[in-house]
Image (cartoon, rainbow over all chains, first blue to last red; front, side, top):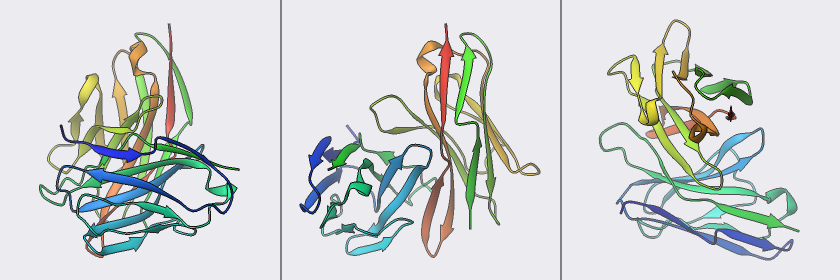
Length: 114
Length: 115
């Protein structure tokens, strides 16, 4: 089954404690992205990757890091989480093949930073 | 820069009534346009997409949307609402930006279906 998986689904942590949210896709997609969803703001892109070792900032990258060492994985790293990073996070993948660029989303990770 | 405006953060309709969710976009070139649906506690899933093949696009679950270039609109409709349509709907625009297909989402519209 084609899918994007994220772990963990729920995470409660404290300010300053480094964390990683994993994302993996099994569709051999080149493009992967991280979004955060906040009420009234929709989805905002944090980082994206066009392929292995190619990443770039999205609209709200401050406080986040990513890496793309393998095509299927795109972890999101919060080196020193702060309460304003409490949000719902989504990983998504897509492919330029076929030129439709529709995205496939993971189930989301709800992060609470206290 | 491209942007998407969804009018109405909350829309309520009666079961069986017409559903109309509005989306206007701004883009300097014809974009790709999408509607995604998010059911409670789930990720987003594609409802339908416009890729210039046809201006009236049919999607899953009886939804359709019409691309109107003159109005820069891509409104989502369904003739008869069902209780299972209660969800949040996001309009999105995608455009090539420096070799990458940049996607911008609207702020979402929550659809409530009243029995």
